[in-house]
Length: 183
Image: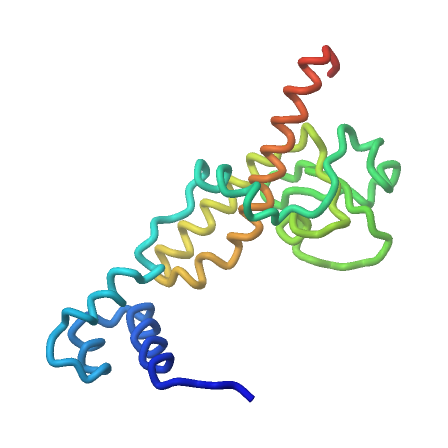
C-alpha cells in the first residue's frame, strides 16, 4: 500500500509544468493561487535552467558519477582479447581505436558510446578518449539547440561522465608511469 498525498500531486504538477516551459502565471493558475509568489519556486528551480555540461565540469564530476565500469589497460596486448583485432573498439568519427572489448558475444551496441559504461570495455591508456568526449559534448550542444529539450539533450550524460572518468584515470596513470620513469 502506498500513501499518496495531494501535496505531492500539486508539487509534481507544478514541477512538470515548469520543466515543460510554462510560465509562472500559468503555474500559479494550475495551483489555484491568487498570486505568483509561491509559484516562482517552480520556475526558478527548474533543471532546464542549468547550463550545458562542459568539458571542465564533466571532468570534475566524473569520479563522483562512477559511470565507467571497465578496466583501464596500458597497451592493447594487456587487454583480455588484446590479440584479437576484431575486439578493437573504434571511434566512429575518426576510425581510431580507443580500447578493447573483453567479451566474446556479439552485443552490437553502438560503439564506442555504449562501451564506456560497459564492464567488458578495456580502454587503452593512449587511446584518443578526448576526441570521443569532445564529440559527445558537441552532440549534446547540437541536440539542445535543435530540440530545446534538456531531457533529450542529456541522454548521453552518463557516457560523458564515463569518458571523462577514463580521461582522468589515463592522466593519473600516465603521471604515475612518468614518475616511475616508465613509458
